[in-house]
Amino acid sequence: MTIAEAAKALRSREVSSAELTKQCLDQIAKLNPVLNAFITVTDDSALARARELDRELGQGIDRGPLHGIPIAHKDLMWTKDVRTTSGSRIFADGGSARRAVLLIFLLLHRQYARRPARFRRPIVGFDPLIDVHRGHSQRRP
Image (cartoon, rainbow, N blue to C red):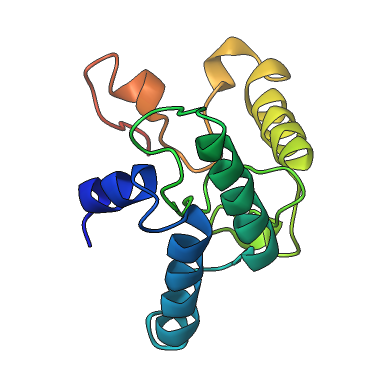
């Protein structure tokens, strides 16, 4: 079933968002041990949200063509109360978005704000925002 077909089936009540979500979760459970495509699967909250969207459609509330269609978020999208690792070991223990923002701020502050202007270079030795913008590559010993 395509997304367009699923959206049409949702609006004609041939299928519910909860049923579509359950089918997706079943496929994830079946294939993820082999594919290792999902770090965190939120079965309960996905089904709860699907039931909520089914109720909205039943009340005539339609938020657009993807209303009720199950989706998966990439692990780079920080989410409240859900482990988000951004593919990094730094957040492997389930670091929160607040901690991530704080860490990024601290790293940037340490690299840029506390050094004299001529030493404002990233630790890794390449700053795409500076080097590419100025039209040159690295020229460091």
